[in-house]
Amino acid sequence: MLLDRSSRTGAWQRVAVTAAAAALGAGLLAGCGSGASGQDGKADAGGPAAGGSFPVTVEHAFGSTTVTKAPQRVVTVGYTDDQSVLAFGIKPVGMVDQYPNPAGTSPDINTQWPWVKDKWGDAKPEVIMANGDAGPNFEKIAALRPDLIVAVYSEIDQAGYDKLSKIAPTVGRTKAEKEPFSAPWQDNALHIAKALGRADEGQKMIQGINDKLAATKQAHPEFAGQTAVALSWYKDSVAPFTSTDVRGQLLTGMGFKSQTEIDKIAGDKFYTQLSPERTELVDVDRVFVINDKADTEALKKFELFTNLKVAKNGKVSYLLDSEGPAAGAAISQATLLSVPYAIDELVKSVG
Image (cartoon, rainbow, N blue to C red; front, side, top):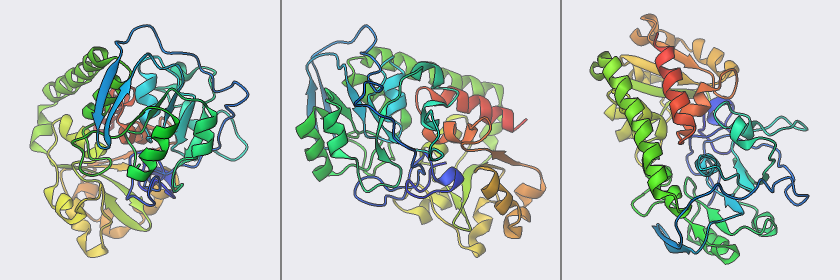
């Protein structure tokens, strides 16, 4: 799950988002996969699918960017931006390696999730930043000769944006986003769709997912009366996500209520680590644990958690992050491609 975009073991090492480590990329996402070659043509995944209306001007946190024509070589600097671009049939030539790829193995795990594998096909994008790096590799990005850079779900700051915009037109995070990773997934998706000249298509995709969420609410009216928390076991502590984090947003989108006290103590972070005496804050109606096997087993040995009423009542869903069906990764990424899969897995987990 992505907690620590820098060194998250298991779920915390992946996608969702982190406590902002360096100026640009260390977060709680986890991920330091190995990069795939792009200079030998392997990253040339092909141009965009037909369609798109240009020129288009996109306002964002660092100003505005005009894209004059359909981009052929897109580099994504945000942790999940590659999936949003993929949703429109465009294969980025460069991307962030969110989850760690076992050394010496191929293909990259980040191109093999059930919800993206078919769309990537045989393409092997260049890794321009590993989860936990202080920032993207600007030299690699320039060498890929992009005609559009997408840095939406990203910690990129003004200095980083200025460097990127000298390489190619760059779209930063949404203008309304006060803190990185706090924008609703729908806003990020539409923002990227606009940059690709596909605003109408993006809106239809978002509406389709919103309809799926609404159908889930209708099929499970009991969710509306329950408070739910998504959490991970991180650095030997229980680490719940806030309601503004993508994981929290997905749960409330399905009808669950959020635990507002967690938001208060987290402040401007997307998660918080609870001291042992505050573990009771996650003793709610339903808990969703996002971790891979090792961290899940560690949490199950933490008596302050297993003694909570929610655990004793069997109301805890343990969702593997990058292992198995990778439901945790799908939830943490919260993209146009992963959300439908995540909804199905969440519903399945509650029986």
